[in-house]
Length: 340
Image (cartoon, rainbow, N blue to C red):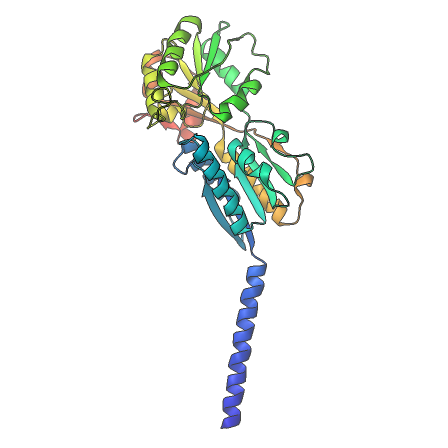
């Protein structure tokens, strides 16, 4: 009887030991991926990038994911920025990821560039030059966010075919500042590309839109989430108020080139695809988890774009566009018949 009990106890101990050994082995083989967004989870761009990440990671096994949001579209003061950077770097230290995905320029600037001997880094949504954030030998690769300027140019000439004058108006955010050199780098002819304007306050934005109605035939917009309600004041919230005012008061058509402009009220948007940014970042991450090194994976430039239409705003201008625009917008659930 004692022998039987002893054998049973030995078997139980052996089973328990095997169970914990298997748990340990499983955990040791589970990779960790930390995704740090520069902005907040309610920002449409972030939602769409996250959808792309989810698509790209479909079917991935033995990987633990964690998201961290720095919320730098809603706050730009130095104290908040400093705390956001500290918390993001602490998240890296605490989580000890095998791969760190950094979305948008502020995350590269405030987190990526300050990591030494850290994890492999995948970037996405980068408007600037990655070499300004990372040394050439850093374990980094990713996808650049480059506006589809050829498609935007074709759209401008479809709307206004006779050598139109175009004025870009944006806020003073780091992403816009980083993008403007790219806008001015291409040959826009026969379009007359006027000097871009960046403004800080709602009054300045309204003045710039009014002035553009006198010296331009079309206005381009992308980002207005950091437009302040007066000098030194809070950001205008909800930010779509800026676009609603612009659409209602602009003397010339407004073309959006940011991912949520038409949802906010712009008649038409042609923008880089946030979904592609997420999907490519996920693919590169999976390649690294399978053994590739970042240096072996060339940096990708965005190729896809999305089309959005706000039907009520489009009706104001009585514009006739090729049917392909509406078909593409409807196919991606970006045709807004009301509420924009």
